[in-house]
Amino acid sequence: MTQIDRRSLMTSAAAIAGATVLAPLATQRASAAAPHAGTQNAGWYRYKVGTHEITVVTDGSTRFKFPDGFVANKSREEVNQGVATAAFMQVPADEYVTPYTPIVINTGSKLVVMDTGTGEANFERSKGTAGQFQNNLKTSGIDRSQVDMVIISHFHGDHINGLLAADSKPAFPNAEILVPEAEWAYFMDDAEMAKQTSERMKGVFAGLRRVFDALGRKVTRYQPDKEVAPGITSVATPGHTPGHSSFIVASGSDKVFVQADVTHTPVFVRNPGWHAMYDQDANMAEATRRKVYDMLAADKMMVQGFHYPFPSRAYIEKTATGYRETMVSWNATL
Ligand SMILES: [Zn+2]
Image 1 (cartoon, rainbow, N blue to C red):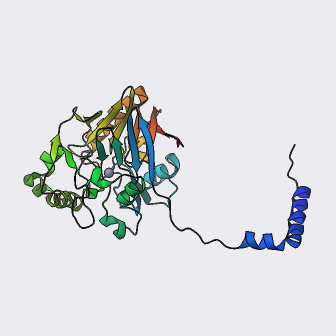
Image 2: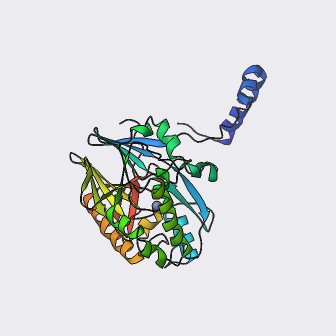
Image 3: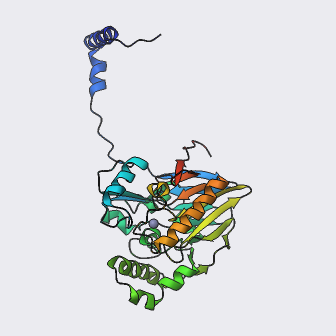
């Protein structure tokens, strides 16, 4: 039996002191200060869905002081309480952390990027905390010029800005760009743009025009419930934006639900009735969220969440007040 008591600690201390006297060279080596590395490792993670190989590639994250009305139907105090306790996101009060997590799906015949992060130009702007997608993609061994298809879930900047390189040239030079038909119809309508009153929404419209204009508006529009690539089926999940889309990626009996922004970070999984300011039609977004999460819980289907903590995979259970996510543990092999 091992017992740690005062006497054995003192004995150990004496032994260490003795060792110092007896082996000054070893002690010198042990105490030589190694410089701090000061950098994080590359952020990518791989798993299989049937015969599909999925690479989760982080774009980094943004930490910011959230504004009043960040959750429209909750007070700042309630949000702080929820963030700190429900999701163990122990950031200082009034702050919030948003990770960005695109994925790459290799179906065997197609190399597909799904959403693109905040864009390479954001790497410098954010001092490296975001805009990391291309660096991490390269480190994962994937060549951007080999990407056949980029599928976009919706038109917010953190999902589309990565369509452009830092010089505003196409970030994926050989890829077909797929966008939701309903999203395109709404956001490319100049009459809808003219109706906007909030600075945030004006910015969304201006931002997506900048991106798609740089691409010559060359996109392929997709419908809900369509197999847009081998084993990748679109699902209409409106509310966050009018044409917001998610995907079921399936191979054999294996599948994952790629939700995009059906919920934001897991604190909104725990509190499905919270109306995040990003949700354009908050009531519709909540109805969609509950429908999707009831399905994920009933079917025990894995969910890949764009704003979940890396590598952003979880299973969902129903609770008395909402849902709870259990993040999938790291697998050291494929
Ligand atoms: Zn988003």
